[in-house]
Image (tube, rainbow, N blue to C red; front, top):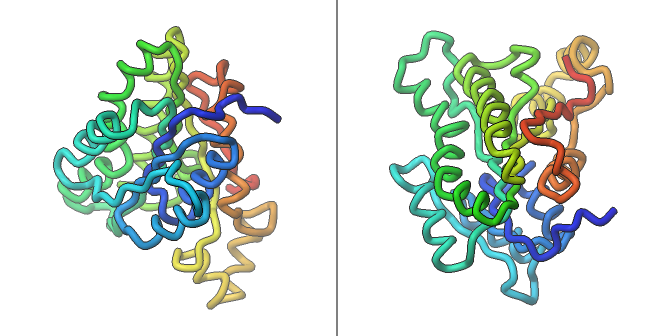
Length: 252
């Protein structure tokens, strides 16, 4: 299937590991020039060696986007030094270890900034450029925790707000062929995350979790989700304005 995005320029945040890394590799395989951004440089360097071993076509940026003005400064330098991204995938997110339901306001703000504030700051610069060209794709990585309400309150609420942002912004920009959409992954395997450790360390608890929450009987793999993101980044997504797509193995 030809996604008709060869030659486009894409920015992917949270690109060093897991889902973000798989998205970068998927887009690169479609002929997209990718700018991979992450805080840690080592995973970015190994990723660059995988997708661009003998060329300088792709780019890596090591940046802590939680620092003040870092998102806007990053996107301005990209536009100046590389070009205007046609595609942006906001994969950066997480709970920042804020697990207490009655955590303080500052902690909640940090979680919201990571999951939603950074995309808003980046998009505020990119969207006018995309509307001027009458072509753009913005994809946010959400979570099916917004449907199951399983998870830490600060994180789940931030992702729920992210979904509302996708719906409303997607409707506003649809007329300009700037398609804003989202995927909602279910539980994805990572050996350093809770479910990965549970599977390895507590077989009985893991079997109970699978029985109650995973009809497919296993965790997902990042490589199974990346193609859905690639389609949403493509010409084929022209009717997907504001779409929020669960890719979760039927998890509940």
